[in-house]
Image (cartoon, rainbow, N blue to C red; front, side, top):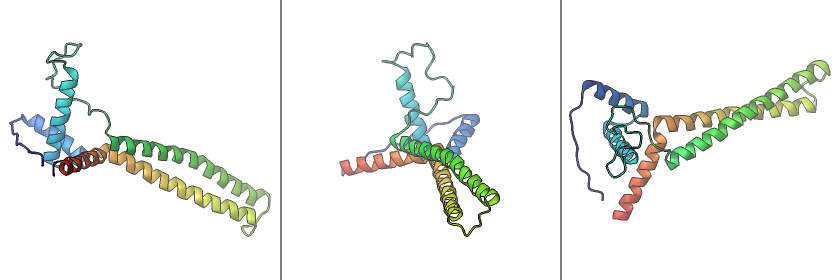
Length: 170
């Protein structure tokens, strides 16, 4: 089991407000938010310094500028890729379904077909399938985006990493 230590410190009120905003945006409890900020801050600090020397731009790495969250984790990449694929499918299925709908209207209006005719029934079925695929793809894309933006994907990586560490230690 990994030994954990407790850290504490006093911060100005504006820093506490920024921390609470960070925590709420990502749906984290205080402990997980603090861990993430410390880990990512240390990673950022180590990336901008080399053997204790500030980076080549001469910036003080302890500046109060907001640090961007580091590279995507494996889970975030997976969710992001799935979300992009689903979004691409949304943009492909929408015009295809619309084209089927227009063909349905044209066949019914100008060719004098009724809804009992087989070609119109086939088009109606394809339109229904297109609407279903569009809806499912939109929900998947939204869920993937939400998982990345709220930090759920990053927490999945961290929790699986913790499980692996505990299994190796035990």
